[in-house]
Length: 495
Image 1 (tube, rainbow, N blue to C red):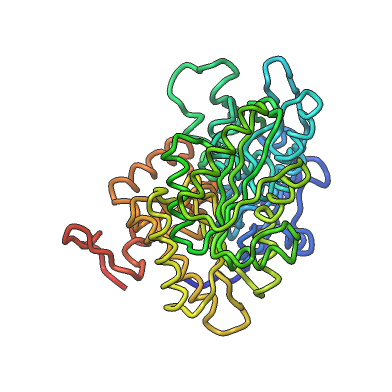
Image 2 (tube, helix red, strand yellow):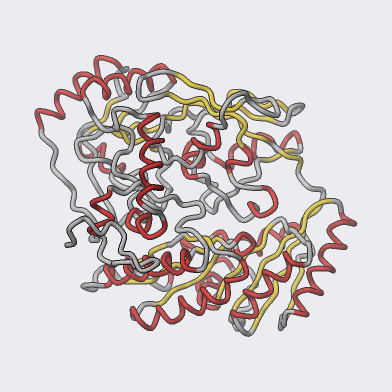
């Protein structure tokens, strides 16, 4: 699939929508001139772009409702957008559609140190929550690499994780309540601040729904106490298979680290000159493994993890001795994506999840794909929970390289599915992985997904044509997958 071209929308239709939105919203809340809407044409997956017809910037929930009511009445597709740091094209505009940006909903409504909760609007940055809670010795655990810029509304949409999600969980494990507006313009609250909420668990269903079920206006998150101490081990391995097996060995030993990340040699060598984190650039793979808690607990766990790594064949071990050194170790991992620009004009960041025991097998498979597609791949990922982030390096100025990168990425996801994993861990499906959904799920499963979507969005206007593929798309997907001797959707014509 090639990156879509920017479509031209009908000027008369744009005028109709703009006039209706301006009548319902304050001055300055509706953008429609190209120089104003161009910054919203893509998210972090910049290879896919679409100039939006209109961008709306509501400042409160009432304005969100007003914008949705106009769009529903005029049958205009809506794309909710946070900070635009997503990497699957989930926030890419729809032709002849409206982008509803939550950037102005950026207030921390309440922070309660006694209940260890914070009520925030969707435009609040992930890191800003921890900065506000820090004065009370608390913080918000999910920490995506983009946490300095990404917002909590986007985190809810994608069910974001981060380097500490192994021990403390993803967004879904740290959000207690979501207040959102439906396509009918009605306000609904999912979950609650109690230990449990009555009725179906629609909160878990909504988190990770990629803007297809409603527009978030408020989120209650769980805060946790800052650990008294945290230290990181950097373990070097002369073979990626040994490094992958060491990850499984740590968990098998009954240890749940605060974070357990892996980087291959390509990743280490592109990051080290950028951040000077002290990485072993001669190692084929390095593991970053963090322990946190009371000082005595940390010392004991660090010793246990060192023993596991030595048994697994580590060639070198380094343990952070100060908080500054710990942050330095992590700085390399969190800056891996921008550091890719030092060695490649472009990169394509994939996101798949596999059983930990298959890490070595999949890494070897990716190495074979590098040869097959003639492209390099830097592997950096949340090893503890099997969430891979291969960075496929390419040059978009070279004819055919982007297409090869896409096929490379699709094959990585197919391998993830083949070993019992899934096509995404935290980046979402968006438009990037919509074909891969046809590989992972059956027709009956996709029908169930569509039924859930329609139950929330009967008008099918919220982020349409994302995440859930149509039956025809699956039929047209180029790779014909045979399972149990049967070709999926055999009754449909092939192209």
